[in-house]
Amino acid sequence: MYQLEEPIYFYLLLAIPAIVVLFMIVLFWKYRVQKKFADSRLLKKLSPDRSSFKSLLKISVFCFALAALIFGLVNPKIGTKLETVKREGVDVVFALDVSKSMLAEDIAPNRIEKSKQLITQIINSLAGDRVGIIGYAGSSFPQVPITTDFASAKLFLNGMNTDMVSSQGTAITEAITMAKTYYDDEEQTNRVLFIISDGEDHEGNIAQIAEEAASEGIKIYTIGVGTIAGGPIPIKRNGVLQSYKRDQNNEQVITRLGEETLIEIADQGNGSYIDGNNTKEVVEEVTAILNGMDKKEFDAKQFTDFKDQFQWFLAGALFLLIVDALLLERRTAWLRKLNLFNERE
Image (cartoon, rainbow, N blue to C red; front, side, top):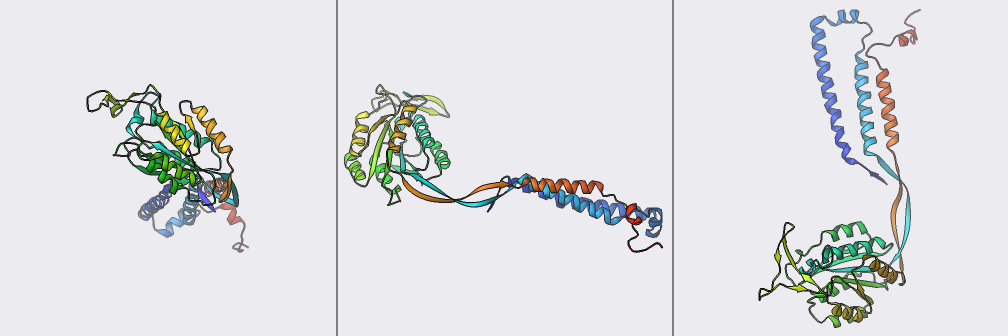
């Protein structure tokens, strides 16, 4: 198994044919100039030590040195062994409320950004668990399927916003129903669903759907984001505040944290309610909850212990460049003195 650290440097190999073409042009030019100066027999007498083979050898050595240098920049890595990594954990799904009320700024910077910060910090505290992310407002949608790739999960989480769902409202029942399809491992006994929301405008028979999820082994924990006092819902364009949301009577809408609804959902789901205003306390409580659960062990095979190989290519390039510097475009005097074929008696 191998991998290339910087494959973009392979484009530099295009310089080699360009150098060869340029060399051939120069060689042809020299041939024409020398032909005008003298014929071939006279030229050999005037410069007996000149070697046409040496010039071809020099350009070949230089091209190989350049190729080795480029491969050194690419830095091929070779995997030295195949290792089986044992992981232990639970399946954790986050259902994030992306309704317009999450734009309220009663908690800095606003509710939805605070929610994403909470989820990110929770993911950072996880070890061998699997995570999935669902977004919901008037309807729910899968954002990240259950995975052990935390980096990708956080990347997709960062892109979530209140414009992802056109229909407004808070269809928490749809989010719970979708979450049940995320747990694809029948042997996993501990399944956790964290609902991050301000608790406003929840629709549907929440108690019943939460009980059904609990009967399937899914524990539902709710994290409330916002304040009891609440705040207006800003309407912005390109980050600039335009106005605040108003109702049919042209009165400013104030959205408040609905703790009662979130507590009810958690109670029906055999979980608990968590105040989401303090990130550190939330992460500590979530960590304690997950650590108190039995972990399922599963194996994940992966190539490990990749070793850099660039040094061999750089050493080869350096050697070839030294050889190129020592090669002269004329016949070497010491080579003639060897008298290998008894030319002189």
